[in-house]
Amino acid sequence: MTHHIVIAGGGASGAIMAANLFRLGDGALRVTLVEASGEIGKGLAYSTNNPSHLFNVRAAQLSAFSGTPDHFERWLAIAYPQIARNGPFVPRGIYGEYLEAALRETAPVGKFRVLSQACVGMRQLENGVEVTLADGSSLPAHFAVVATGFGMQKPNEGLLSNPWNDPLPEDKDARVLIVGTGLTMVDTVLSLLDNGHRGKIIAVSRRGLLSQRHALHRPLQLSTADIPLGASIHYLSRWLTDLVRTHVANGGDWRDVMDGMRPHIQAVWRYLPTESRQRFLRHAAAFWDIHRHRMPPAQAERIDAVLESGQLEIVKGRFVSATRCGTRLFADIVRSGWDEPQPFKADVIYDCRGVRRRADQTLPGLPGALVEAGAARLEKLGLGLEFDRNCALVNREGEPSARIFGIGPVTLGTFWESIAVPDIREQARLIAEKIASGGRVAPRNSLASLP
Image 1 (cartoon, rainbow, N blue to C red):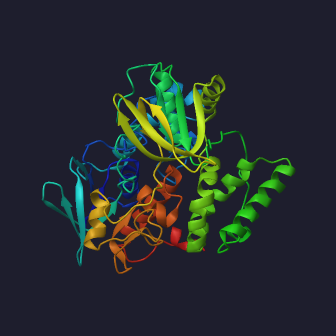
Image 2 (image 1 turned 90 degrees about the vertical axis):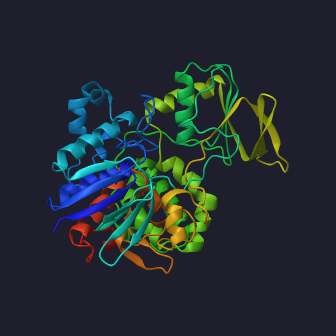
Image 3 (image 1 turned 135 degrees about the vertical axis):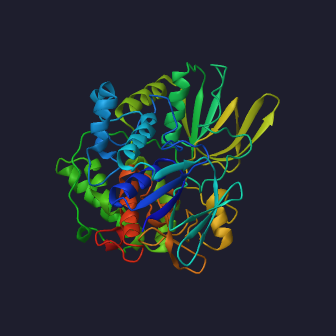
């Protein structure tokens, strides 16, 4: 019997999912990728054409297949030999091309198609899934996968510009305000500089923290037995700090510890008490992010240069709102130590706050439709839809679906580590193996097998 799988979302998560289905599905399946743009593998992070926008992980970690870790590097050496020779951090814009090549390599003729439509609903039936498209038609499937990427993020507020879609200011001397100081801010600053921007750039965030830079290191070998799973965030933070301090005192690098923790983060998050998760989000997430999601050296050098010249300034403060007065914009910022907001004038304001803002019950797109229909619910902290250990969508009553799964950033609230390629490809392997088993039995070596 040939199984039909529908994947909602054609970004990196959806494309990696499709490629793993074909590689692990022994040919007895066909896949429909539903993507409004009709493009494969682009998504939010990989739609950029700016060569200054680099992956913040090394090329050796970018294979779409966990069982073939050098798959991306081999493709890169053939398709872009000069880029392959330039170093381990490569432009993100080429990744969609790689994913298309991976699909051509794995998909049997006539077994894969892309529908240039939006998916607006899914309903589990006794023996399959009914997928609803934006034109009102329905698509029957045996299984479905939600791969909507950063679909939990709300649209930009009012006068704030989208750093990915809105044009750069024509006036090279324009005063630019950026809300957020993470990696999206870095990309935005580099886009401005590449466009010849000369004006002042101010980036503001609550803590005014910048991502650390990558450097050569050797990940520390840790097992789950070494980590205090289930401990409070206070105890866990103290344990991690002591481990870093001891490791550095013995001649190591803090990056060794961070990358040694990486394979265990999903287990840590799952066993972290809800109150500790809340405290982490309030007090520690920003510090985790700047150490976990680091800048490639080439980007860090350019950011350091504009900070030193004074063209870029980092301000510690909380963005409240923006208003327009004539041709100018004014942002109200409550600076650290102040009680009242202070107006910051700008010609353009970019919203670079990232994707971890909590959602509500009025989500747009497919995630909102699933919640409204009762086929899904938000996890407790509102960071994303709730899934079980096998990436199965959890409905309003708390029951995991046997037919609908989720992959990538939409699973952030359940797994925390779910936005980087190594995490996404492992989820893809898990789901592909489960679908190959008819959705009945969890794979032996899956996320479900973690303690």
